[in-house]
Length: 280
Image 1: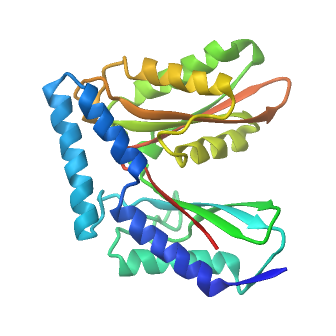
Image 2: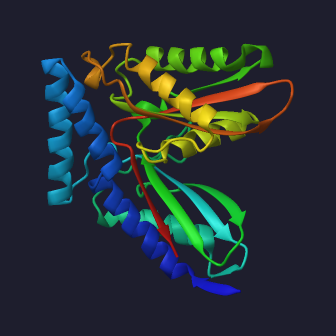
């Protein structure tokens, strides 16, 4: 067994959230530059150039690249030979709290979703998804999810007869209805299978995947490509002003499901697709 101190988890989480809010990943930077090269619209080129410049300024000056510094979401792969010296959830939430307070990041979490809606003033609690895996390490993938794009996400329980065409139609319809609202160009995470809640979790996990990655299954990789091409033909474009770049990537994750259904969730992320991973 390996002992990991809660303090080390807290420090790692704090560092990740400050960093990811100020420094976009190379995958998104490269995707924006590729999009700039293929765009024909001067307006679309102008928007993409501004996004690239904005991200560079944020990195150089260590200031948030977007005013919505999001809600903290973490996917944790917890080694079965790991023992935490301290409170695991408390360590993660303390790391988030210190990151948002000391990093001067906007606090956007309210304690009650319907009635009081009082700001917690430190962006906690975080949303933590934990999976037990083999090994003696702790791998944490963290992201700040802005809600302009989160609000555009959808889930639907399709019948098996809907087949792949029904899945494609739902994804495309969700993106079309979202229009300019999620601050395109976007990353589209699609979760297929499992149960109602698992499909949603898969779709969120999919947005954390690199924008230049593909599903390991060739069939789903091809579906990702088909959907990306079709989405980018819609002409929503950067900032909703038209162009070939409505989406930077379509990432699909799937899981076995019941014979009576095809659960499909679409989680949309804006161009500020912020995520980092650390292994402790």
